[in-house]
Length: 358
Image (tube, rainbow, N blue to C red):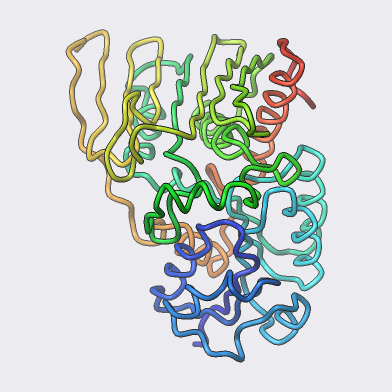
């Protein structure tokens, strides 16, 4: 049986290296090609995965024509997601988009329209969807352990997007400051800022936890740092028919949560009619309170089953079995999240509460 042919398209997002490692380590997949207009962007991946020169491209169409991939991983700047997805759809390939979904609701709908009728899958990857504590919390909520879910609270971020490369290789503070003026992460036009980087996690996974329910209104506030055109801190309040939820994003946490949990703790907290669950990022347990047992009780996390151990394994499993994309990677769930993000961004700009954008 031939291996799944996977290509990496654009290296703007540092997660490309992590995703290519998942492809490299998958026994039924191969890196068929990589593309970026800037050869320097691909240098680390070429070295890490011993990618031969004839699989390295600086021309998009040459890459797609030569490789004829089963799956394209897209790690472009957020503002470019729609353009790239339309180009990828023309090559009749499955598309894996690294978070966030898109630069706007309109762009997200362009992506959905491009893939509609191709018979191919599109998945929007949110790396927190593969954190065992958060999946365990979802199981417990679905099982009714805390009654009806009425509040989702989210706080997440990192020291800043330039402090780490693929495989979480650290970058010095001096190098971060050198890169900031030219980095797309710090440019509004490219979709930079902590709100667009991290709110989609809370909004999308929050929608999944809420079984697809959307808020009625959104209120958001962002910081305004001198000399920086994007936000580094945002607080968003979502008013649902069932209550209020809060989602906070932060570039500038004291430590990165995958190394040392900062304070405030990165992750989720859930409030139900009959209890609560705390689910920190990367924890080995969640903490549960219920009306019958109010003392906080640790519950060990569930281990991810084969076929769902990481994003690439999951999407290739769906391609191979014909199964639909579900959960936080489902574009339908992601579209609700995108509506929350867009409404929050506009609310912050206009400094007022807004009805959820359609």
